[in-house]
Image 1 (spheres, each protein chain N blue to C red):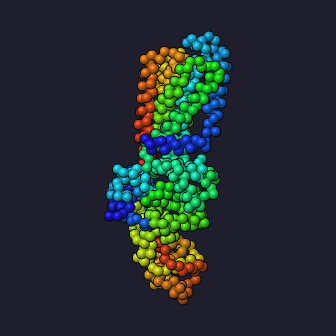
Image 2: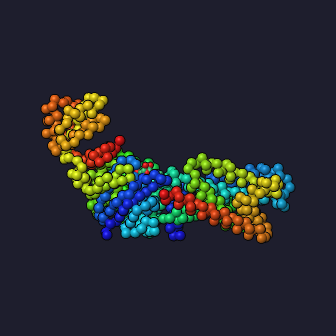
Amino acid sequence: MNSLIHARGLVKRFDGFTAVDGIDVDVRPGEAFGFLGPNGAGKSSTMRMIGCVSPPSDGVLRILGMDPRRDGPAIRARLGVCPQLDNLDPELTVRENLTTYARFFGIPRKVARARATELLDFVQLGERAGSRVDPLSGGMKRRLTIARALINEPDLVLLDEPTTGLDPQARHLVWERLFRLKQQGVTLVLTTHYMDEAEQLCDRLVVMDGGRIVAEGSPRELIAAHSTREVVELRFPTEDQGAYADELKGIGERIEVLPDRILLYVADGDDALAEVHRRSLTPVGSLARRSSLEDVFLRLTGRTLVD
Amino acid sequence: MTAATYVFEYHLVNYRRTWRATVLSSVVLPLLTMLGFGLGVGAFVTGDVQGFSYLEWMVPGLIATTAVQTAVGEATWPVMSGFAWVKSYFAQAAAPLRAGDILGGHLAFMLFRVLLSVASFLLVALLFGAIRSPGAVAVLPIAALLGFATAAPAAAYTASVTSDMFLAVLFRFVVLPMSLFSGVFFPIESLPGALRWIAHVLPLWHGVDLCRTAVLGLDPGPGAVWHVLYLLLWGVAGWFLAVWRYRRRLVF
Ligand SMILES: Nc1ncnc2c1ncn2[C@@H]1O[C@H](COP(=O)(O)OP(=O)(O)O)[C@@H](O)[C@H]1O
Ligand SMILES: [Mg+2]
């Protein structure tokens, strides 16, 4: 088998609490693979096991064809890791953060300097090479962490929530860089609780909830399998949106009542909206849109991704 | 082993950015101590201690405490930072390094810092004319050994606690009393029996006695061998404890 990551029945327990509850995963070379799930789903626990800094409690795990228990350092030598929380060195310069990290992989100083220059250009931090890390913005630090993860020309790049906490502009810059890496054929594994991030970057993903995988496929397959083509969002001027559910019955395949709005799962949004108006219902807000992974998650778990 | 040297290298690069802040404690503090204790207190201590002037007698003890202060200082807040604040240890653990490499490289840097502060103390003492025997250079390896004997267990302790409050506790309730009762300022023979026992158990007194033997040019005798072995025991035990604590904290 030609999987970079191969997991069967993978389990992680912390003193009796099961954070990852028997997951099966295969990641193939060149793929951008995602773990999509809310906080506490077990994404970071899974990433740490893949990163060989957390021994599995049970199940099979092979990374790059090797056994993390036995070959940890050999595997880590070929991984690039961007952890959920940045752990850059604030006292060092931007460039030194890369060159000192390169040495941990036994990369000669000269090669390290050349790669640092190249990578800083790649993440658009070339002009900040000599400045300290402390005053950098959150987005810049994130990009530097990504550059650091690439210093050893890894076979597999692990990104744990690469854009969480960034403002929209900074997120788009990170996405754009990750997209470039993907085009270069670098295998990416990322976790996220943003469905737009998963949709934009992932060729294939698993939806995680409560330590389990609840669905797997490409974003498009997942939407086709678990949602309708379009969604109509309606907001009524009341505390209890559910009061309107009865009057909407029969429009579309399915109806979801959320605290602040009602979702109608339909084939055609405009037709559905016309039907709502024909029934003389007057929502204060209405919107027809395409189905997203958010809807898939709601369908599968009964909850929203970001609360 | 080579992996540990990469970690040592990282700490050196880091030190290039932060050394200025340590100059004060490495040069100015020995100077002040020398003036205050050696000349000030020394003026009151009429007569000699074990046949030497008080200043001459006390300097080797001060060198040993400097080694311990530096070693424990480097094995506390910077170690806490590696785990909790900057989290640099976790960045290192994601690279192909093992807990022993991460600890080993950092410990090497701690000993490097010990050697720097002891060397600068030695220079200051030399300028004050408080050192006459050329055997005094032997305090460098002694300080490294004493640094190992104290930094390793201190790093194990730091890796086991979760708040820096416990680091202040270590200094207040272990390092400070140890400095007072280990024959730095007065011979331990003047201590009551129970306190003298503390001096024998803790590492500092053994380092003080070795430094004093070297600086005053005394005959080492077989006691010196026991001092060295006992300090090694502290260091090696501390090392194994620290590797175990580091692994627990980094791999979970
Ligand atoms: N070291 C740990 N000790 C105990 N519980 C943990 C530990 N790490 C994670 N958990 C728990 O495991 C669950 C999954 O956490 P995590 O993998 O961080 O989820 P995610 O990254 O998807 O937010 C959470 O309930 C979390 O509290
Ligand atoms: Mg997480």
